[in-house]
Image 1 (cartoon, rainbow over the protein chains, first blue to last red):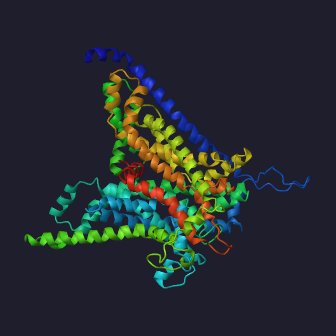
Image 2: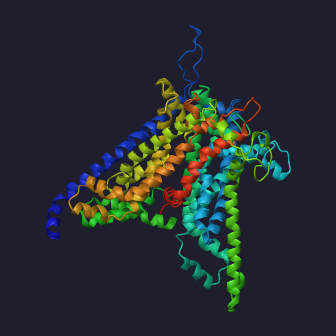
Length: 347
Length: 291
């Protein structure tokens, strides 16, 4: 019976592999189309827009002209003149928030994950509680922390102070950092916990028998084994922190130099119809984020899309290659095979 | 913590050590829960204070009052409409992103074709994209097309973060399923399309649902696109309206009704999180980690 159905399959092999590729592209086309429309085309438009200035008054008619003058790289060089002081403040704020919040979140998150990993009781409840800050809309959490940091708010009541949080330069920054860490440290904790849970207990037992103390077990076993998971979580968080917008915009307010980030600067320029400089600043941020992500993945050997899908896909691919599609081009399998050792050494 | 017991064969000692560790981790758990819930609790308590007692920092309002909740829905705030706008945008974004992403991620996870890993990298890269980098051309295009203050002006840019997230999440869900599923279906005479529809899709439903929750929460929380594209209060989603609540006078921030509005906007999400916490954690882990 099975032999009967298998024989005609032999003739359909190459056909079915081509059919599979055709089906795959058919299924993927809508996604490619949408991503092209909402991301790839706009980026190129931004690139072009950044070379144009603000439409001025038409000298002949006296009305606002709808032609934007070509200004070349003026929008970029403007960051080195007086107009640039606002940009550099925003760039500094963006970097500060990115670095400080992510470092604090990582430390707190890992601590949370270690505690949750040990705890036996009430795991479901804790997991639900830890998701609450993540689920609260950033706009709501900004309003909430604005209320906590109000002059007559609970933060001052607890501290016994009368700090004007929003108007001080350092205190405004601190308020943003506290609010952001509150919202996202649990998220890092959750992802780290997921990484912790795949470490087999036997590893710890073996280390214990060998006489490793708790700190040694943490630095020599837990950290290296949880690192791949943690690195990805930290990268995603850092990219999020570098494009921070809602929290400072609502908690402190728009156009407040103390907390203005590059995203806020871009949005402000765009809503004031200075599209050219908005696009230029946006692209600088884009480049900044890109370089950061590139450097981060290089330094930490973060295991991202490049290897994850291959290693997973290979497992799936090998079966049809032997059972269904023996004449698959070896290039795909070979490529993933070649990537395997680097992936191993990374993790 | 356990260094003291390294060489003690006495049987009483280890038991006491376990109690210690248990007590310490219970204490840690309590700290974590307080850390996560205290600000939310404060929002809830503040929203229940009458306006005259709003600056009292007691643990519980002296007089529980719902006047803030009534104020939120007063005509001038337009908040009911804002919730409807948020709901429309979030539901449409979720449905569209899922519909498109389900096909793409099935192909990426289960089918064999050239350029697959490049595509996955592109999807990953787009999910890391700073939204402001595309807001300028989109704003210009939309105003040229008369799309400012429309739903599509919010929905289409939202796809730039929800679609890559959906593809990434669903791909890892699809990949976790045993490959034999389609094989046996195809041996039984199904085409790949039929195998997908009749075998894979029903089994993938939980993963799709999880992804839907995460996308919905993301779209519900969106602020930057809405504040840029929408200036008509009637069209603004709840997040933007909340940030612009005004009190009786210009210098009087209506903290009570802001807190009430915050509770109203958050409570559905918190309930969702409580019910589906296990799924959401699985989804976040799938999206953020290599499984």
